[in-house]
Length: 102
Image (cartoon, rainbow, N blue to C red; front, top):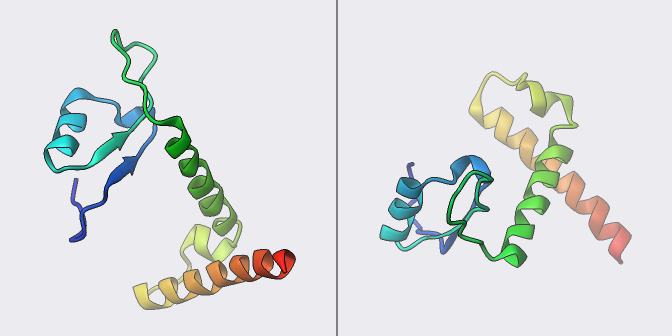
């Protein structure tokens, strides 16, 4: 797994990433794996479920962004135009929550 230049403190992932080798490679890099155990694991390692709740927020944000048809189907031909529209859609979502909060 390619990791960006800044090393994160933790990695939020779903049960599909629960594997001993994957966990060990993260721990060797100094990254705390926050991954719930699979149901067939003999000795389950329970993550910090308070931190794992943040993953739900991220998944909901991606779901809201994908409601924009242009983002879900990637109509844009260049990376610059796709990322620009992604920024516009994200700021639109942020403005909705900001206006409702004030």
